[in-house]
Image (cartoon, rainbow, N blue to C red):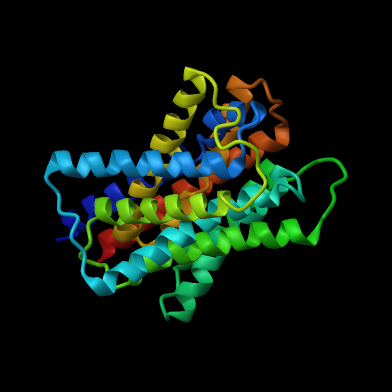
Length: 303
């Protein structure tokens, strides 16, 4: 029994790392699209709708059922709105505060997850709590701007709302009995479909220019497909797997690989500077995750 639990935890940790790394690949595909003039809402719509279609095709190929019960529809729709709003609020926060500060504030979501779980009488161990504090400190070292910054309240609120939306998504996926039997593939499929509809509705009324503005080459299409596969579909799928296997609190700690991956991509591919403080932040984050995984193995062996 212990061996089975150990394997399940190992798969959960692995899925959590993949979720963090894949979501951290956003800059790899999004940067050139934004620089080319692609509207944020257009980019978000295409990344979700392409993911939705690929996920649906995969389920058809595997012969998986799309059937869900009536009472599950509204909860899957809520999950889609929460995950989509997390992306939307983050991008909107960039209009008011630097992206580094926004990244730091968004990484409040492990704290929010721990608070929500504590309210639900599921308190994390002291090892997990220490890991949360350490990774939060590491993200501050990674992302906090070194020069004078403008702390506009709107940007800070939007970034915090992004974190809170993400936290509720993780908790609901783990705790809801209503959707406990829904497969991770189906859960991801319907969440992506909801997000696609939400971004389309948000895009129509605004004055954002032509719908396909900035999408003019195969490279642009390739970047949209890359966004759809890695930081969207794979991230959401592995996030659901990890949350169900090791719980939302530990999964949220593994999300630290998001900013770490994004910063490493910026340094290696876009020649962005790597400071000593950033290197220290990466080291702190990785050590905190290793500590959490090691302590989790000890807890499993003791049971």
